[in-house]
Each structure stands twice: as C-alpha cells, then as structure tokens.
Image (cartoon, each protein chain N blue to C red):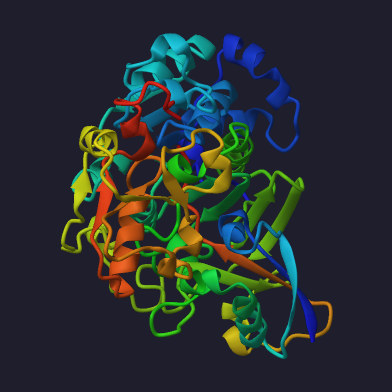
Length: 92
Length: 386
Ligand SMILES: [Zn+2]
C-alpha cells in the first residue's frame, strides 16, 4: 500500500527537511519501519533500545489514533495519510 | 451545556461593566448570563511567557473576575520577540509583576493574584485550590505533567497549549468528560531527545495563535458556549497554514484518570521525567581554557553539533560540523586519539551528544564547552549571543 507520511517540524531534521514522504506498508508498523530505513537517523527518536515505539509519539491514521485502532498492526489502504505527532513542551 | 460555573456564584454587572462588555452581551451564545459567569470565574495561568501573554491579555479583556499568574522568571530581552504582555521597560522585573501591571491597565475590574515562584508538588495544590480551570502555558514536561495531575485531582479542566518552531498543539484535558494529558502521553521523552524552544527556536507569532485558542477554550468552558476541545487534539502548522483536528480518547488504563488509578496524589515530576538519574557528569572545558588551547595552537577537534542555519549566525573557529541528528552515523569521522570538544548553542544539547557517543562505545576523550556558543561570546568579541 502506498501511503503518505506527514512529518512534524520536530522530526524534519532527520528527513532532509521533508514535510511529507511516501511510504509502503500493509500496516502502520510496516510503513513506519520502511520509512525509518530510508532515514536511519530518525530510528532512535521513534523506537527505544528494545525497539518499542516511544510513548511520547502518537500516530494517527486520518483523524484516528492508532491506540484506538489496532496499534502498529492497524491495516493501511492505498492513499491513507499517516501522521506522526511527537509531544512538544514549548510555551515560553 | 451550562459551563463550569454554577449559577449561585454569579453577581450582577455594574453599568460600567455592561458598557465595557457590550459586544459580548449581544452575542446570544454568551449574553449577560455568560458575562456574569466570566466575572465569577477564577482562572490560573501557569507560565506568563509566550502562551501565557496572549491568554492573560485576552482573558483580562474578556472580564474574567480573578486571574492567577504563576511564573518564577524575570523578563529578559530575548523574551520580547513573543511575550507581548511584557515591554522593554520591564526587563529584569518579575514576569508576574509586569503582567499584573499590564492587566490592570487594560481592565481594572480584574482581580490579579501573583505567585512569583516555581510551581511544584509541594505548593501546587495550595496554589490551584479554588480556581475553576488552569491554563497550561509552561515550557517543560515535568510542569505539564504536574498541571495535568493537579487538574485531575481537583476535578477541573486543563486548557493545554504547546509550541515548537512553527507548530502548535491545543486541547482541553478534562478527566470528568474525556482524556487527560497522561491518556495521550503516558510518558515524557527521555531527556535530551526533544529540543526545547531555547534550542530549536519558535516563531514569535506562534504562541499568539495557540494562546488565543486557549483563551477561547477557557471562555467556552466558563460560559458553556459551543463545544470545547475535549477529546480532540488541535494541531497547527504555520508554514503551510494548516489546522488539523485529531480524535483522542480516554485510556481506561491511565494511571491517574483510568479505571484503577495508581496515582492518587502528586508525585516527584523531576524523577518521572528522568531528570534525577545519577549519570556521571561529562568533562567540561571553560571558554577561557579553550581559547588558551587554541591560541597556543594545541591540536584538538572541535565538533559543532548545531544545525547548518545556526552556523550561519556564527561560524565557530576551527570547528567541524556534524549536526546532532547525524552524529551516531558519522562517529567514525572523529579521531579517538585527539581530544574532542563539543559545541552547541547553550552547552546542553552537546552534553547529550557526548553521552550518545559514550553509550555507542566511543573511546576517545570528550569535553563539553561550558555554555556553548553563548559562553564563547565572553572571550570572543566577534561571537554574538542569540
Ligand atoms: Zn488520563
């Protein structure tokens, strides 16, 4: 499945400044893995030492959090939009 | 919906107040009943900086009866690019005092209570008690978790906003009716992984947009107008001028608002955010020591981990540029036999760079330049503070 992955400002340092990238995958987990293989510097931000997706990153397919779908096993269909939303804390 | 202020708390408006708030009174969704609720409301603003400035100004103008302001900081020149409640003449004053003056100039009907101190587990419940909602305008994860937990424990809404570079988020975390901050973010990022605005920068207008959204949500919660951002996360991106609204749900396993809460009182937020781990301090070098080394022609490798656009502000003498994000991949470009000195803007991210290399098995000697480029400006007149 070809999907569009939206990259937030905080992670664009790792994607040569790209705001969105095309990725392939039958599930969210597969698509994010394939994306991280293209931009390896980002891996440490997305996954912890054990390879688990970090708790401060939420992933949405369309408007829905994958926590409320099937997590990283959430199936994707062609043309889906997947958004990475890391926690930000700025306010001052 | 009738809002979070009960009818028995409201009092009548004076003639002067009716004149001042006339544009609200003719809105059917607010009208005189809503305006009386705004007058009865007590709102606590935690952080009177980028977000807190527009929130405080708009809520004061709107006629909120009591505004509490919490901030331990003093106004600095570099705040004025975005913290519009403070002025050049306020530099070095407590932010709470500067903001109080501004609010009272704007609307003498507002009662302002100031707390010129850090909010923490030992004082937060005392400060927050009696307020109807809290505006989260803080700039760090530990205070954001603290504000969330205070709101859940007191049963009041947390009107959330946060900003980074060109991007902002807003939501209303109200555990009685929807998810809390912990439902969305069960754990903070490990220290050093996510840059702060001091390190990553922020568009000065951005807090104006997100803070104004927080002010709107506070007014909606108080008056009962419209539908608050409960269970929704609003994202804003200024470069593409794009808003997205995502759905977020309550986590039944949330440790504070779920079915079986394990957090029943405030905790140690520094520890929760990993700020208390006893890591061996990294070796450091002062700007003066480094200058002497360079003047003496000693061979060292200087590694500047700032992003390319920051190098354009100031090129560090003799430095090799390896942006932080590329460091692990390019660690072979370092010579383990030579002392390496790490440089960033303020000498914080460079500490994480050193730890990252050490954890990856780098064997050579690594030093952190104290206070980074800003420290270097003390010994090199050509270097700017930024
Ligand atoms: Zn919760």
